Amino acid sequence: MACTTILVGKAASYDGSTMIARNDDSGSGHFTAKKFTVIHPEDLPKTYRSVLSHVEIPLPEGALRFTAMPNAVEGKGIWAASGVNAANVGMTATETITSNPRVLGADPLVEYQPAKGEKPEVPGGIGEEDIVYLVLPYIHSAREGVLRLGSLLEQYGTYEMNGIAFQDVNEIWWLESIGGHHWIARRVPDDVYVVMPNQLGIDTFDLDDAFGAQENYLCSADLREFIAKNHLDLSLDGALNPRDAFGSHDDADHVYNTPRAWYMLRYLNPRTWVWEGADADYTPMSDDLPWCMVPERKVTPEDIKYMLSSHYQGTPYDPYLSYGDKSAKGAYRSIGINRNDFMALLQMRPDQPEESRAVEWVAYASNAFNSMVPFYANVERTPEYLANTTGTVSTDNFYWTSRLIAAMADASYNKSLFHLERYEEAVLSAARALVNQYDAKLAAEPDAARRAALREEANTAIAAMLQEKAADTLDKVLFELSSQMKNAYSRSDA
Image 1 (cartoon, one colour):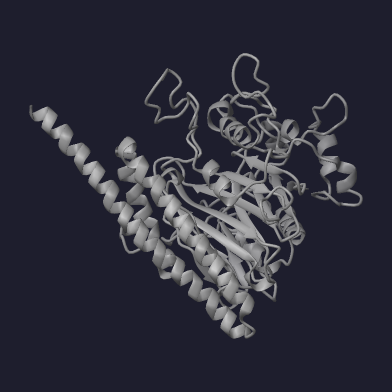
Image 2 (image 1 turned 45 degrees about the vertical axis):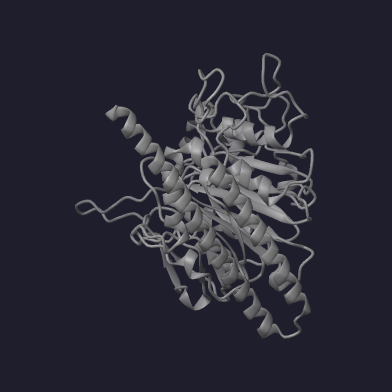
């Protein structure tokens, strides 16, 4: 999957939260309908079988309830994608990343081989379809998530290169798979943010810590030998750069991947470096963009949504550019594109009680034309408006309403932009007001059962508000598109 990830450490965020967020994008030429739901322990099997790779994995006892963003249409597996479990551990998986022939030749991906003649099938490894389902219900901290997924990768392998984020209220970890069975993970420093655009991103790694105290680095058990045997360390000074050793620097990266990182870094650190012109420190084609940076100011959920919605606004690369020199218009792959399926931003709020600490911000369809909304994650069910997605287009759910808004607004962008900005501001303002109200109600309520009911009530109220404002915006962009088409018809008739 082509996706974009942002991670924000607790000292870099506006309220001390850890925040992890990701756009989940479909492959070229199609959409994947998604739904926001809760998976309960009793719904989990004793043995998991992957739909795509046919690998079978026994599941532990003691599973936890968790939220998920599975595919709404059955057939290709669960693809739980992102969620928060009952222990307030968040996870988003996966960011598809790239590698190189030296790695893939040394540790090939574990691909499914179907039966052929007398030759039996050979199961493949685990992949994006499986990872959240196999890990999130069984962990109680971000570090535990890294260790469980790492052990699964070493035992069963993977058929694709992926990056996965884990968080709890104290820390964030980022794991990257390397070839079929190897992996590295780094703890995100508290005072930084991280941007990931479909590339292997970690640019420094301390092997001594990974094989010693393991304070900030973890890796597969034989990584040091794997690197040495296959001559993967390309550094001249002995300081391992995983991006050089395990990643790619293809020409396609300079169009598809690195420009997205450049834009996000430029947004949060506009004065730290020179980003444009002949004397730029970094450009959209720089292979050495920092994996993490200390922001120039604290980061909010609204900042994250803006970056994950971006189409290079304020630069010559904006595909909607309507003024000035248009020669570079649309030169690079945007972050907010029509193939965005959903965005999930997971926020762990340290100033709130554990049972209402986790808030999951959700947006569906193209981020350039939608709004995100926050929901309490510690619930037994999610609102119908976000959970009832099917493969059939319907204005009765947020997914397809968002798709319709995006399709019409894209076709009438200049006229619809005003409505979209008002829509997002109205939804975010009303949603924040509701969360503030219910945080206060929850703090004042002594009864645990009543607090659980209040969280469900809050989510229902947020969904009702959202449905009203989304329907109103759909009407407005439909009017703008209809007017534009009518005017075009009148001119052609004349």
